[in-house]
Length: 315
Image (cartoon, rainbow, N blue to C red; front, top):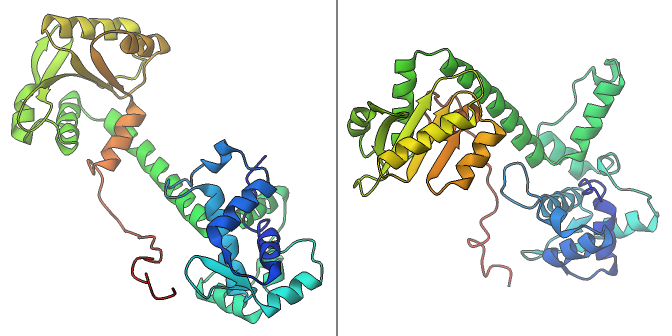
């Protein structure tokens, strides 16, 4: 079963509180999971940001919106109960509670205004087609946190794509320096100076260089860095593995701006030596993660209530 959107969860959540007792939020999540027959796999589905389970997050936003419309209230942390207004709404036997229902309450409208989510003044004059309508429905089904993280992911995907194109257009010497910067930023190689001396030095049977595994140099990792367009096949990995064997080494990293064939990946996973294959897409991801070749334009923080701060206040 598909995980219900937060608006679909509003009415069932309000019904849980219909007995006018206080209900623990975590218990309500479990009841709704049973009511909607949410599987274990679906319960483990995370937000795009990876910060919380998707289903739990949607129940949380359903509770938030119901509270903003004064249909639910919380008298102590982690609990909620129905209000007089909430009982009146349930008494009218609604088939569904969603944002359009909540908009008749002034508290909810004030909440929307604070969130600066008003539609454009001429929204009703916009041409409606199936594409626009489907997009509007899809956005309405998503929580603000989902929309935020998905917008961030789209921006990041575009950045990584542009970054990879930039890397592919660079010279082999620059790509070599880029690999040095990335590995040092990831914690390998000790200092950039040490890494610079190691990478690109040996040229020994498929090995472009070696780099310290840690700052103390307790072990070394051999590196192959290729700015290629075509798919890297099994023969290239076999050559690299043979070079490692010749050095009595068992750790290597093969970095390319393209990709690896299935046979190459299977071979790397089947041999005794530990060879990590890094594709162009993974390279761009690592570069963004470790701030190599990119700079920050703006920064946003998602914050939530610090429950420890209020510990003991509502006992």
